[in-house]
Length: 251
Image (cartoon, rainbow, N blue to C red):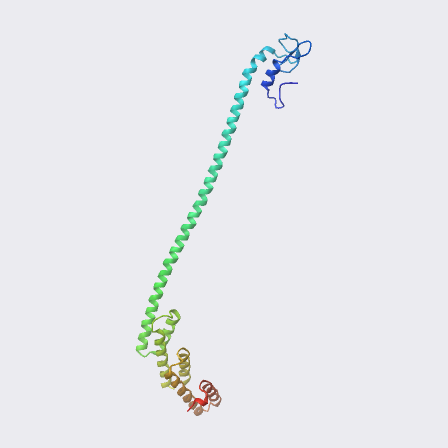
C-alpha cells in the first residue's frame, strides 16, 4: 500500500510513520517510505520504486511543513473568499435597502405634495364658493328690493340649494315667490299664480295670505274658462280646486 491518496497528494505524516516502522517479520526488513515496499535492513535505494530512502526520510519534515503551509494558505484563501462573499451580500442588501428607502421617500414626497395641493385647491374652492354665495345673496336681495321677484326667486333658490343655512334666505325666497304670484295674479296669469302659490305653501303651509290668494286664483281661472267656453279645462281645474279646497269648506 502506497502513502499517496486518491488525489495524488502525499500523506507526509503516514509516510514518515511508515519510514520508521520496521516490519516485525523474522528478516527485520526496511519499509520504503515512498511505496511501502519491503527492503533489506541497510538498503539505501528502494528496490521497488528506486527512491533514495534516506533522502526521502530526511525530506519528510520539510515536506510536512510545505503541506501545512499550503493548507494554511488554502484555508486563508477560503476565509478571504467567504469574507468577500459576505461583504458582497451586505453591499447588495444595503443597495436594495437604499433603493427601497428612496422609493418610500419619493412616494411620501409625492403624497405630501398631492395632499398639500389638494388642501390648497380645496381652500381656494371654498373661498371662491363663499364669494359666489355672497354675490348671489347680494344680487338676489337687490332684485327683491327692486320687486324683480322672478330674479329674486331664482337667486334664493340657488342659494338654498348651495347653502341651506344661509340666514334669512328661506324667508326672502317666500317673499319673492309671493310677490311673483301677486304679479301673475294682477296680469291674469292664473295658472302661473297657482303654481307659485302651491310651491310656496309646500314650504310654508301656514301662510294664510298665500292660501287666500290661491282660492281666489282658482275661482278667477274657473270664471275665465267658463267665459272662454273651455268646458273640459274648466272641469279639470274645478276638480283640482275642489281637491285642494273641499266644497264643504267654501262659504
